[in-house]
Length: 349
Image 1 (tube, rainbow, N blue to C red):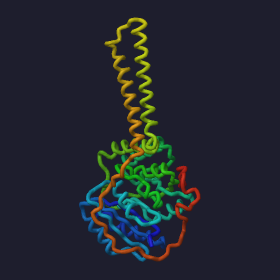
Image 2 (image 1 turned 180 degrees about the horizontal axis):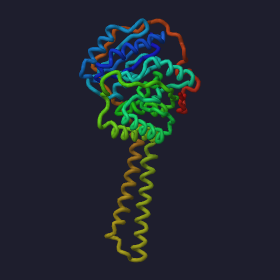
Image 3 (image 1 turned 90 degrees about the vertical axis):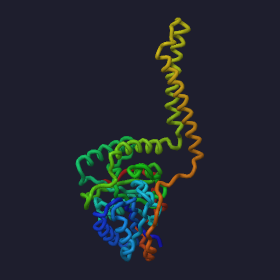
Image 4 (image 1 turned 135 degrees about the vertical axis):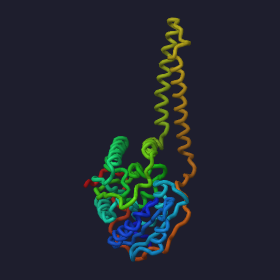
């Protein structure tokens, strides 16, 4: 029988934090008294994290919890690692956590309760009081404010690593690049109900973040632009490119018409005027944008197979999960009333 809950944990060089985190996660899942599994994804670790994860899997978890490990061929980034974990998770519900210990596994019942009470398909942990460096807290506030303003989704913490989501959400999410930062936005666009609940956040158990880089913020801004396009114009690219192109072409046509009147009615010389070049350029670029919009519509209806954002080297799977029947504490996402068409409102603290 499939587990009721799968904990998906991407790991990149976290040998210092893993032992304590693993023990804490097993204790939290065992306390649920439900068939659960832990799916660790080794995202190209170069320290002893891989050996520790294999040891965890072979040692087993508990009567209700099994441990599996997915080892990627190289580092594919957090989005790729999460996509690999989602593909191999077997639970009806999935929870994502960071292996650095900043997420508190014992608070998982708060996310489950929020999903149950609000009928949500995805619940994020709102880190109201973050135990991080000032620069990280500041940039996070800017990022959340920008995402909230541009997407219209009234959440307070988009990039939290502590999320509960249904298996249906996990199956449909497109994850690549830095899209793991926009999971609530993508889920909401797919029609799922999205909420959040306040959770405790703490300092890392040990070490430092391995997923940070100097390119993180420029890449995030570029991916935000991509997300905005995908959520608003992916099904109708002509609306964006055609609208911009038509406006630009209209400006170019107006400039050329005015210059033509000057030439024909008043005999003014226009051959050396920069405005003539501007009008011609605007008209041509506008026509090109309209053409791009048409091509986008054509490609939208003839898209090929999507490329997987990860490549798996091995899967360490010691055996099936405990076959005991789990109590049905909550109806499946398909049967819940209002399980689709989310309004994006959070549950609050």
